[in-house]
Length: 365
Image (cartoon, rainbow, N blue to C red; front, side, top):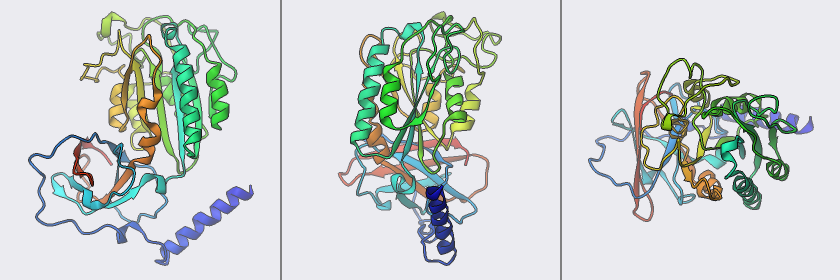
């Protein structure tokens, strides 16, 4: 109770000081839009940039009617960046903007593993457990303010022994906890059965979204580990083709569509996916529009897509989550238009001269 009271007083104090002009607010940090700057015809893509619109609140007060935040993660560039390293355009018009480190505007990270525990994951589960434990230990060693949750799932989320999943856990899922507690829960995971091909990834993500004890002001990150596409509301009735012909044939719960997951997470959380290659996932895939394909959610939320050998141990360090958090920046500008959708283009040149670009088409704020 004392901690909550102290936090409330701090927040109230910041608001009062901001109102008095003592604490800088973003309108004072955002320069005017530059004049005579055009989008480059050619730039370069040596540096990968991951990004999305960011709708979650930050610590610095924002008093702008059309304020926009774009979160960009540029692995390898955790320090030393300034606005001079970027060009930003909204609907082809150059923007004046502020640049802040996300870690300085958020209070740590809440990370949730969404783990497929059906029979087809039998070749991976030992490696998944080992990799999760190693990953969690690395988070601890990195000194990050992190809480970890885990949702095991099959056709049901969380997985239940009295269903086609044929496995359950106690507790049914791990709420956001100290990393040491998460290690113990991860070590207790196993695989059950699962009937048809798809599993209920969307239901598991939304279960976590609605039930985790998210901390206020943290980065919210999902890591989905699976080898299958997801069930979705109406998946049997719509009669669509599925990869390798492995479509749905049985019930599942809870029921969600991909759009419902996107609408919940977009701007508020990041989804990374570690996908085993084979029946549903291939490294050469470029079309993620199938309603059961969760990779589209990763792209739209600025997450990574990592492919793994189903007979090998996944390397969760390949996600580089610690680096991803450390190299996340917020680009903040005032929109020039209240239009429904926008195109936002970000051009980056690092201190080493290497370049990258990010294009967000048809985004909503």
